[in-house]
Image (cartoon, rainbow, N blue to C red; front, side, top):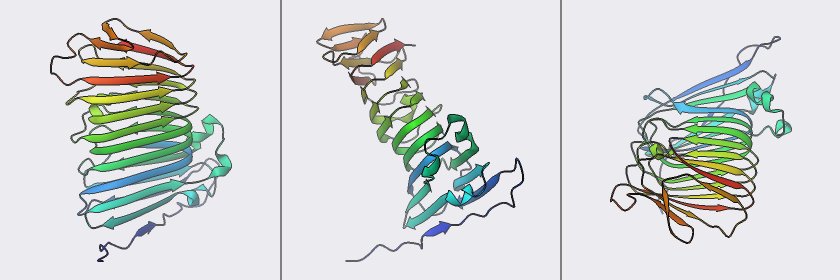
Length: 287
């Protein structure tokens, strides 16, 4: 069997920027140029802190920055990158478990900023323990997305359309607050959201290019789902659960727990949403 050739893995030992004084910050910076890669997989695994993700220079695969107000924490920030022919694998990891349950305002003491090229298709996986997440996917080529947050406050936005199909978008949110805006612009084919005990808002605004399916599961949390008035939507709510259900106007009940907007069967790209909720509350709003 022939083993695929690949470049030697690059472990990026980033430098500590000078000694610390009162109020000073530890900083690290790294840029990886875009080479012959045709796609990349990215794993961002941070147990505590603030993670900011967004578009960056097109010619850079990633521009990474880390800052901390605490001495010695920059050693906890690790990036590794390997290129297997035309596929790259990037891992950004921090496992400072000693502050996993730190105060919410302390999460801003440790900040990761990652900017990605809009030229290369990306499988993106983000795992956040406790802290904050600001995920701006606008214009990025996302072919799959998975976001998992524990006790985090996360905002996700996609203000401009994804130029390629995102086959699968999976979002798992625990004891946290999660807000997503312009989800239709991610160009997903299938989306699954799982929420535990928290406050969630999913906004499906944006341009729906093809038929898409979304499954929403909520335990004890409260979720609001926004859909554009002009978007054809079919909604199924399993009313055997004990949650409260508040449905906006514009939906017609077809059978059982199935509802549709006028023009759902018009042939235009449509969104199908299936909702399962335990003891939480569900609100559907047309904007």
